Image (cartoon, rainbow over all chains, first blue to last red; front, side, top):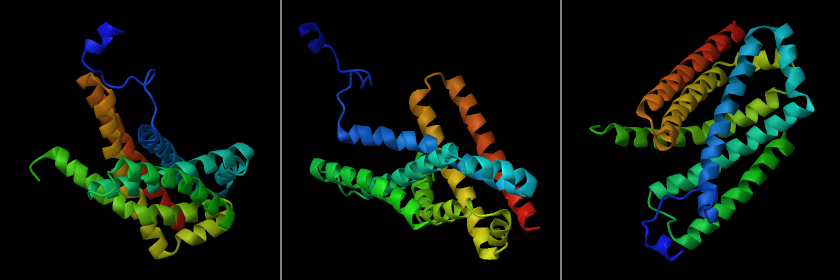
Length: 126
Length: 110
């Protein structure tokens, strides 16, 4: 252990990394960006199926109206909501606001909570 | 624009700001339309303004995605050859899929 302390610090290894809210939300931002790529691909296929005509579109609606389809759609809704809200947080940082640890933690909790509320709103209003 | 990294950084933020209202609008529309029947969806896209906003949303979101993905490759792919292959594939994907979708949109309203 003593020997280890003398070594130079390494970049965070995710397996032994002590999780904090800030890092957790940061990696979630990236994770949702990848899920959003799948989401936008799903939307593109929705449009492509529409163009192929009503007969083909039936297969798409069969999926999107199924239990799995609903689950996937709600998942995408949350992923887009989170990335959008946390994106605003990032834009604020880019403008130079909200860097204090207390503020960053508060805005993080706000974004996480709001992402679920926004998802709920999308699915209740509709 | 001397530095490509600076240009990318700025373009990523500009596209993000444009996408904020567009994504909210499109997500609301999409989740609403996906439950409706075929004729209603076609009717929606036959509105010129809605059609154009959808096009703009698609193009900018793929643009934003392409920059973001190459940023992720930059961080996680060490081998520069693999990195350029990944970037090439992502560029192809971010060009072909939106193009195919836009052509499909024109087919829908035809």
